[in-house]
Image 1 (cartoon, rainbow, N blue to C red):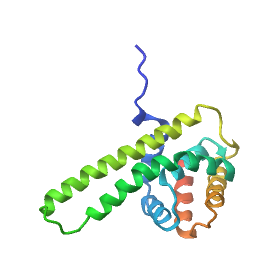
Image 2: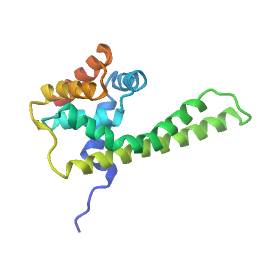
Image 3: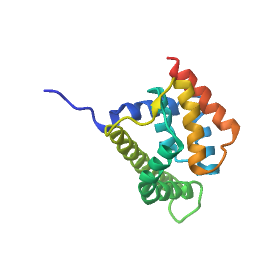
Length: 172
């Protein structure tokens, strides 16, 4: 019997886990998320597409952001906010139990992110996105398209970290 991979095994999810583990990537993603309103899952999706030689336009990135916005605002953002508020806040709950609960919330947050990535991955099955380009050029163009879609310039430092890590991952 042919087994279909579980959604947690999509190429996008595997790429994201590997890329996010690269030196400095998690901090750079969080900097862009907190400072610029970047959707980290969408950002990882753009890097994954670049690894597949796909360069997107600002209009395509905006369309993707519009498609994930409701899920992000309904689930990921409030869950993340709750997890962050629970960290180090004194309540009547014993600190160890509160931290254990916070870890459960973190697990739910990760599942919400995985579901968003699964939906983005499924979206690619409707047809190719973007145009063919070399991975390094596509990564830079996709970042620029995301900046344009959001109407802001990302800080140079986290962007450089992400692009450097992408170049390392893409070279493998």
